[in-house]
Amino acid sequence: MDNPWSDHYKVVYQSDRQLTNPVSYDFMIGEENWKFEVTPENGWENNTLIAVISVFFIAITLLLAVLTRVWLVSKENKNKFQILAHTDSLTGIYNRYGFDELAEQMITKNPEAKFVAVLLDIDDFKFVNDIYGHVYGDNALKSLADSMKAFFPSGALLGRNGGDEFVILLKDYSYDDVKEKLQQFTIAPKTFSYKGKEHQFSISLGYAEYPTFASNRSQLMRCADAALYEIKLHGKNGCMAYKEGLELRARKQLGFAFKDISENLPGAFIIYRADKEDDELFYANQEFLHMAGYKDMDELFRLTKKSFRNLIREDEQKKIEASIWEQIDNGNENDYIHFHLRRADESYLPVLDHGRIVESQQYGKVFYVLFMDWEDMNSHYSEKFSR
Image (cartoon, rainbow, N blue to C red; front, side):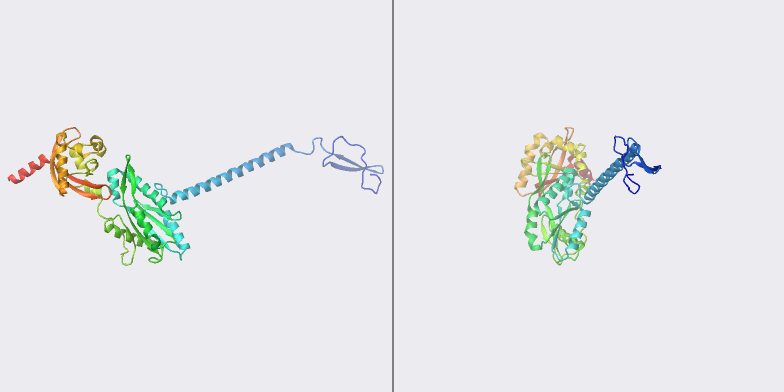
């Protein structure tokens, strides 16, 4: 100390380095107070402890980063799964679950707003599936969904109920607002591609207005369904608004499955286009394939090049075709033709062809034809009438 009453010490000696947090020891020599301060040459740092703490801190930081990444990925996947759960995988629009949930929310949150619900489906969709196959039926479904996306405003809620039935909800629209627009959409050409060619199909559409005819979403959809059912009963390929007097009933399947009927007909059966330049084969049932010796329709289409003409023996082709078109030109749409049917093995079978020409909305004029084995028929009836 400078003096006994002072707190200040006079440095007598020190090392070259600055002391950091030294340990002090006070003592007396005689009447003088002395202080000894000391610190390790490398300071009081514990390198091992610091290293351990540093590693621990880095590990915690990495763990938090990993957990944060996992949480973000999990949240992203959850959002993706929610989207997938609400979306129809084939068409990219809402599935029934997703549509119903969002439609319910829209109407519940806007009870005073006007809505129009639309139900539509593809006419004779089973016919498309049976003739062209389910892959091309799916093409028709995707084509219809794409046309809906392009035609209706971005705010429209679009969904697929399942099968070939689609649904639309339009907010802030009334009957008067949508009547012309829905008619335009109904009659607009709709096609799907099949082996490089475009084939047309038609739709039927029914619609209903909220709250004019319904107090909730479920009732609104039932009204639209009743209008759609009415269109189906009156020839399809049309558009109708729900009105009072239409019965709110569960719509039943109309008619029978085309394939079930064709496969159980008492005879061989084909369908082909009634066109002099393009007599394209559309369909043949199992009875015909068995009669003509074809394994399946693919083999039939390949060996005949999808032409009915190539089922007729070459020396008879011109005569039979002339006879068929003479019948048609004379207004006779239902008659019999006798010729030799070319089989898959290049042999020929004498047959009686009972054809009927009808008008199809999708394909124009088509022939529905039943075949009977000429020799079996003659043998059967000869025996029967000789008794």
